[in-house]
Image (cartoon, rainbow, N blue to C red):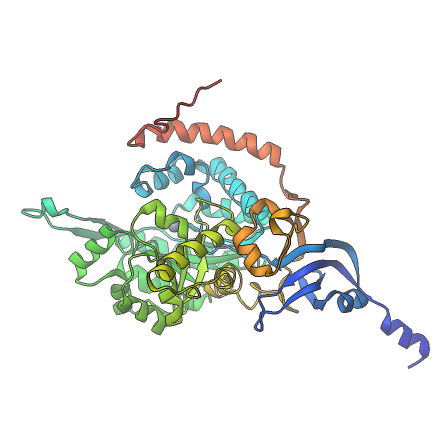
Length: 484
Ligand SMILES: [Zn+2]
């Protein structure tokens, strides 16, 4: 080797980005570099470590971050509904609102409306540092629209679809002199759903370019047949993906399941052989210690959307018990607050209060636990941790930069604790997904935000006209809104 060659070897290599600041890796050793950097080339992270070493080795096309900024793995939202963003403030404090307002809202959107709703949600999430979201839809006409909008905005998306093939009816306590709870399955819908899923999973695994990952939504025990649950399990295995189910969410669901099958919902699915590492339970507020054991034994996962605990007023999910049993738990925005920094904080206070106060256990649930749930554990919940969830060489370059030139985040003795307790979505300055800069200077680059807000207002007026009569109570009670 000549001297000239040796000189060439020492020259920094080209990179697309070098991102500097306090780097919170969420890697296996949970390393945090107070003066760190991440180098990105194409879609990958090529270096993570002390800034001096990374900067000596890489010459970037563009620098992001700064000495006071925080550099974190792109945040992961493991549960959401793209079709519900435009209706959420119409359903406030008017319970129960899921089947009365949220689900009908999906049906009135149409193709144009769902694209607008998905763009609003994705813009909201990207601006708050969320690089991966999860959509659970039962409406066939939404699938393509959501997948295409994810590719357009540049967010990563686990896109779970599936039709309901069961109708069921819970006979109330007062109806049971003559009446009984009942259900009916529709084998024709099931056959259609299985054929459609087979096609959807094959098609989108190519079309999604690694950014949109097709998954299965087996909505719930009251709305999906036993045979469909078993078919979904087999499809998930064959297509190497995840199945997601809303479960143990409210009293009626459990009462129905016990009256029909003599078992609680997770016990029922366990009996069917459906629980396994590919099973992602959604919510599971009303889960017994027996059922937590079943989830843990099956290596099933959970997504915790803390805001929904208060929106449904059923219970607080026992996240501390689940984690202690070995269940991997991710966090979900679930439409209601599409800012996972806020959701982390809500989860932290809710879980610390629920588990900590009764037992005086100040370390039962920590800010680090909340941060893990929004990063590496969220990636595990979606079985995507080979690609995302931490800042490590070889992983996809999904990175969020939090503005640390910010009195809310200074001075900072504990970077992770400061993020969870104090950071808000608007503190996010830059976002990379798969090495592509999608948020710069706190603006989403992949769509016209001004135009989007106008579009959203138009769709929202239509949705409001269709749904306002469904509210039990007037939207405003003591506070009078005066148009003008
Ligand atoms: Zn949901």
